[in-house]
Length: 353
Image: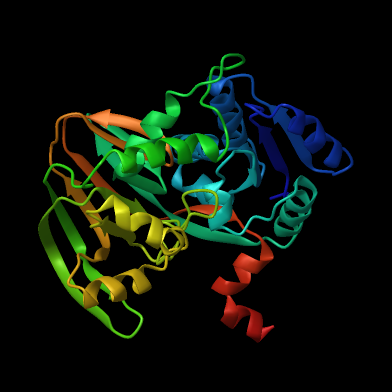
């Protein structure tokens, strides 16, 4: 199959980048560059790619755009077609968590050069996805969160621009301001108790000096953790490493229960929280008999029904009163990845050459 590629641009909040991308690719052979006019048009462009004989799909947009691309590919490409194609994501959002997770460089020119090399050398990696089922809906993603982060996203989304697409204001500041306000106004960060049923996995504690694990077929836990995060990629956005132990192709997803009860402790642990240094936080907490950040690696989970539960999938807010079932779909898609990422997953192959 000829290694042709399609680049689909979601201009969104940054339409001037469309012109720059087109300029950078104007002399590159074998490529088709399209600019979407709406969400439905974006999905239609991906469907046209799936129906073609082209090998590679490049997407320029933020985490919401990436999530829409993943879902369209999962729903419209059969198993054989998903074996033939690979998708890569350029930095087109304010957070760019999926791009951070796969070591996509900054700068449009660097990104274009990186992906042209990846296509030429067929640098791909099969990755896992989360399959989330609720209210009769099945959707896919790489991050799921409920609790504090969903509340912050809710507050951020209320701060919308006055013109254009009326979308939430882009950037880091619209997140950090409501985060400070929500944490500051809560003397304790405990939420309502909830029950989690985890299947086919293990508890996986990583410490600075001691590690601990125990496997289970089924483990039910009652928790009041104010933040629960699940992931098959490490970064949320802005290099926030919320799921630091993720391996993108191990057939498991990582679960973190952030048992932080006092908001006054967050400023002192913010650097370590942001950089995923949970081993150091747990080491400090364990010496003082404080709750730990719990970590599990599992295949399935079910959240019990909870009234007005708000959660996010790759930063896109959702809401339900019913149960949520989550499972991993192992190595379901091929991603185009930079050489630096690819080499870490193929050391034996590289040494043989």
